[in-house]
Picture 1 (cartoon, rainbow, N blue to C red):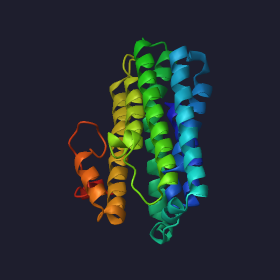
Picture 2: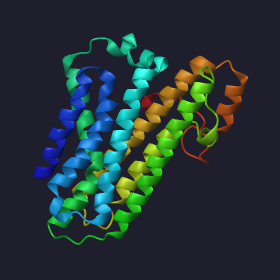
Picture 3: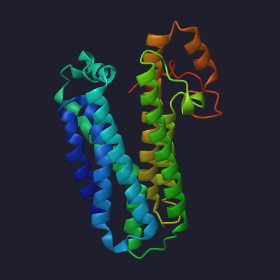
Picture 4: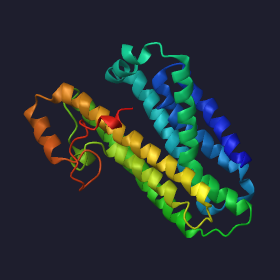
Length: 267
């Protein structure tokens, strides 16, 4: 159990970047926080690392570094994103209790997200029966998610360079309106799958599912925020209206085209 406390301390330390700008709790603190946790897992369980678990940790590190760096570069180079980042409503002074609560929530969530990999390593170190097949499967699914998210972000950046004032409906955006968020869901689905066959106790599975359900909520909430923002900008555009009506917002083949009415997704 001590390793969970160590992971939480690391998560709190890295995500503390959110004290500079509140949104950093969910952006830079998230990406670099996951990368730091991946390094910590290797350091804590160096004696029980196997090839597939090493790959899992490497994928977590790559995901976190790519996401954090992408967001940092986007902040520096994209005026529209800076406008969102420095929105007065986000910079408005928040009660210290709210800031601490969000900081703690984010740190706990990030630890819960990587927990299936942590539990696999911890259980193996304790000599419990561990099946490596699901580690390989989880790593493969995670890799697919990282590629999906990376390509989606690149396609959106390129499309915006060519047509800054147009919504993106090319490439993967023909399939769903938020393929980058879909990629993130796939990544953490792979993480959850990696816990199978690793002798996880009931309490370990509870933590793992809390992390998975938590990131699902965050992704659907993010898709809703994006939809509301696009409705404000493109709502009068007939092409956008037609695109939004025929293209699922997040999950392919799942006929959910709008999340705007679901206020419980407001985060």
